Amino acid sequence: MASSEVGPNTGDKDESADRLFVRRAAVTTALIAVALAVVGMGGSNASQDVQLAQQQVSDQWAFYQSKVMREHLYRIEKQHLEDDLLEKRGSLSPEALSHKEALLDHMRKEEERYTAEKKEIELVARGHEQSRDLNQRKHPHFQFGAVLLQIAIVLAAMAILTHARPVFYAALGAAALGALLGANGFWLFFRVPFLGH
Image (cartoon, rainbow, N blue to C red; front, side, top):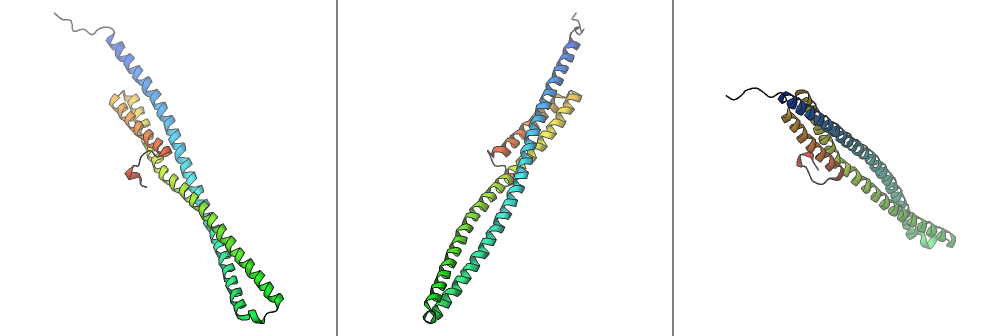
């Protein structure tokens, strides 16, 4: 007749397997927390970079507008002088004519200077816009990655408390997806349709 007795070591093996599971789950949870910290830092930096770039964009376009206004003022003054010279050229003394022509030349040079400066400012503003837009594309990846990593930590904690391996596997899945989205926030390897841009 076969014995139905459970061996004396069976309970010890189950306890040992549970302790090993809990240890591994705890270490994994700590690693997920580290990933969460890195992804959270990336999201915070992206958010700050968006704000900084937007401020720089606003500053550059305000500077651009001031150059445009100055350019227009010199253009209007130049046109008045040109009209004045057309009307009065014959009646002006040589000194007055020389003075008006020198003034007209100065107005032309100033208009050209402001036109050139305006173009340089526009390039800088466009560069800040590109930086802002890039960080705006990155930010949602960090946000969703962080949420998934937080969910993974909660699931892992539940798995440790209940010794439920399926819950732990769900935690690993959430952590993997969160880490992938976080990495994509840093490098934008692929486009995620529901995250926009």
